[in-house]
Image (cartoon, rainbow, N blue to C red; front, top):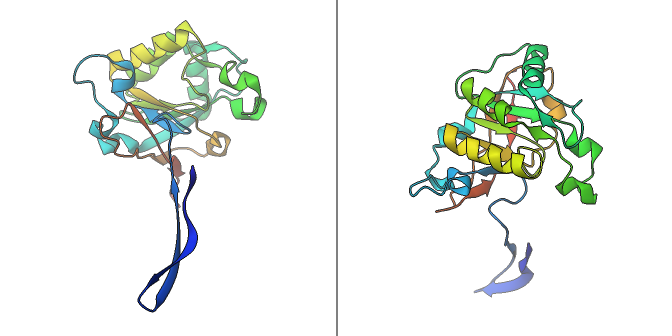
Length: 206
């Protein structure tokens, strides 16, 4: 992001005013973002981010505590079921399920390991979420599964099951033990986009 206007004075008639604006250039997978089907599904007609229903980004949600998993680990179904049981919640149809792995607490984004050592879901755990009606799940890391083949498999399963995921979340620990919430994470309307940055928000009833 670089300056475009920097409050330099502009005059219209007898009025002087100053404005600031910035030029932004980034990937559609920058920062906290959601993957569209087009990202991992080469089939003609796979949905781009502007074609995804906004209802998928305004849902009920829960957060599961997986902070104990080892760096680089592939989280299996047993661990998912245990985390769900410990949460006292259930996964309902069309829920967003956020997965707290304490990754940002353990590895700084300035650490070279941050791009490589993240834990994530084993393939069967992606299926497990889809089987329970989860439409979108979210992780802190740059990918939903450990680096390498498992990551590509996880993306492909999302395509096969008609679900997707959010990457680059933070502050998920604030959701633990709080019960269900309203998840809001609307993407930008990037025509033909393979993903989009989002502003992810959890809202609790008073």
